[in-house]
Length: 106
Image (cartoon, rainbow, N blue to C red; front, top):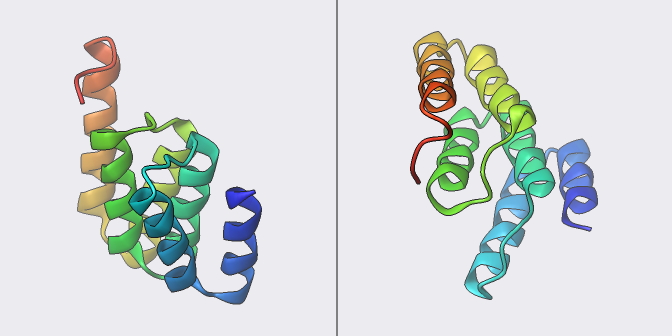
C-alpha cells in the first residue's frame, strides 16, 4: 500500500507528503518494507530532493530494511541527476565494500 501511495505522491511531485507518511509509520514503530523504502528513495530523487533521497537510503542502511539493488540504483540516480557524482561514487564504493565483506554491519 505504501509503495502505491508513494507512486501517487511522485506523480504529483509531493515528496514532502511521502516523507510525512514515512515519518508517521516510524512514529508508530512500523517499518516500511524494502520495496516501499526503495520507492521513497526514487521519489525523492525524481522530485529533485537528492539530500532527502540519501537520508532515506542511509536510514535503510542503519535501521533497515537492508537496501536492495533498486534502492542503491535510485540513490545513485538521485545523486547523478543533481550533479553530485562524488556522492554517487561513495555509495557505489560503500556497496562494493559491504559485498566483499559479506554484507557488512548495520
